[in-house]
Length: 424
Ligand code: S3P
Image (cartoon, rainbow, N blue to C red; front, side, top):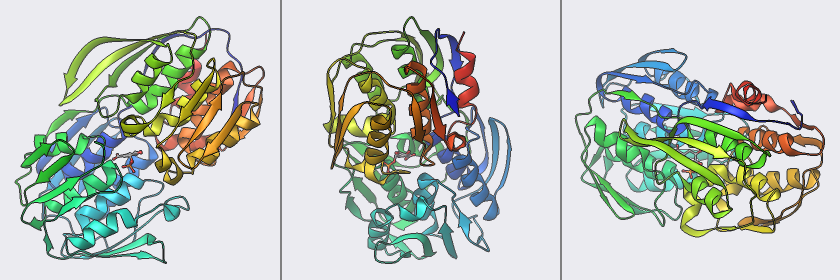
């Protein structure tokens, strides 16, 4: 995909539905009684993988574009999948589903693409085994494929070494099938969509600081819900609106959950002009329209408790930093090394290819503001790397070509056409 430097950027964009909430809609819908109906569902490859897996376990799901209907069969209504559950590229599908599968009366196997086979699964295997689960990974690193032999589980109080919503959600979902209370404590609060949605579906949940407890065997009931736009997808337009001279972009219907809104804090700390309009609540999630105006950015530090609130936005924050005055330091973000790619390595490599001075650190990077030259970069088959460097192309001295850019289909199939529509 070739991105040419843009002269003018202006207009309105509605980003697709939130990926995390779309996954959870299918999963919670499947284990609830009755029908769950959602508008604004994200029809990206990752969420379609979740749909495919639950259909394989006997759940009837109709999905047409952004509308999805799940015919839930209750907590104990899933049937044995009769073959490998293929999660594709989706870490959320594999980790959250492991929690559900650990308490089922059947055996299941989960696998995915080359990237998923490299991602750490020990972080969910360890707490699930503490709960009594029989779950095996492959090799010393306990990576996918995974085998789960459903067992009777018991509640635990688990202190997670990482702030990860996937780990927290996996343990909470297993807790629905366990005997007694299950509690998860994290070092910093990660995204809380599971907590919000489980409560709305009828589970008995208690949140206390960085700890969440769940009671077993709730009667979950199907819900009607509206999935808000994904702030992680909006992030590319926030960056484009700030960086392209004279730009003004209105991004409609964006989820601004405080456990996800770090990109807004960073944009503000860098001197960016992002205005929140019509703040409202939709299906238990805070939502707003974002008006982004071209701004002169300066370097900042991104670290500490903020990291989980913007973890998926760091590639595009790095692109913003590359165009800012001064230096930006990103630290406490070692989690980047175990995302779809090692995003510390892939981001710094691409920044350097485009003429930006950037250094990788074990837990982050240092980026010196400058101007992007043109060139060819790799997506490394990582959707967020492809989209972040498309933004770089808009403001580079000459065109930027992105190899394997079709991987944007993982989370944002219409990304390039939406980006094009704003260039006038
Ligand atoms: C997600 C949690 C985050 C995030 C991922 C989606 C989720 O991962 O990076 O894209 O939906 O729970 P971790 O839980 O591994 O931090």
